[in-house]
Length: 78
Image (cartoon, rainbow, N blue to C red):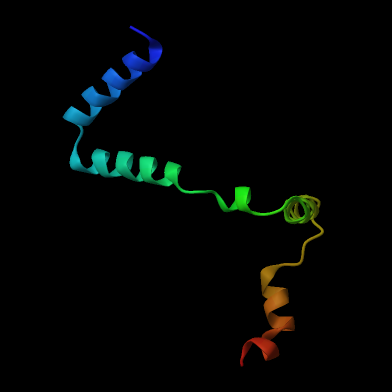
């Protein structure tokens, strides 16, 4: 029996004995795996900009959300 066949057998056994909660969790896992990740949909420049921003945050160079919200509050009230 191949590894894939063995894995399928184990998964089927699990499904046959799983609780409703466990089945819902497995279902959502499979459902989520079929959806495209937004990261895969954006272009390389966008990915680079996001990575740069995350790096800046790691270095403590970011601006806290509260400060940004205060600064631009007048434009957000529209």
